[in-house]
Length: 262
Image (tube, rainbow, N blue to C red):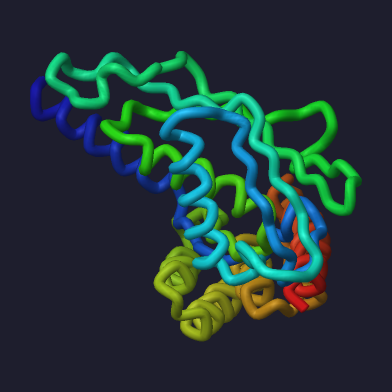
């Protein structure tokens, strides 16, 4: 009986692992949430007191210098970042902690709005604010750096790594092999294996999906759309249609980010 349950367990584990699919990693452009010209001088004003105020000023100056998209000082176009209600969520520190006497509010309520030429522009929209919890830090530096990085990521065009899932096909192992090659960065190898999967079965929808991801990675969105449409025609699935919609959004974000980078 024990060996029977062990066998059943192995089958279940194998089924769960196969159902997870293979994660193929790609990069996409994330435009800045606020269109400020490149080289704009950012003036950061944390509306808070104590050591957090100084740490935020320092962290933003370092982050701006590190990104190189804006400037921390000098003449020319400027924008002002006001940080309202910035607090750091910290649990009660140990009794022997030298920072124990500092205040420890319960939440982080971070609302950053940008004033450019006396016109107020919000980071996200007029009704939404950012609320984030941070774990306990023995000093203010780490928390301030995280806050600065989060705000600057919204204000600076950058690339983001993300993943798409390719489902394995039991009767056509070349599909999973193609996905694994792409996941390892071998896109041409993945293309060859996907075509091998189609040679074995011309109606293999998931193989066309892999080709769609390969073309997306190469920024060939028209060819990518064609592969996704072929996959959906063979096997109607939401992720194939989502691939087409995602391509449109990715192109828009990429064009906007490149315009901001100019």
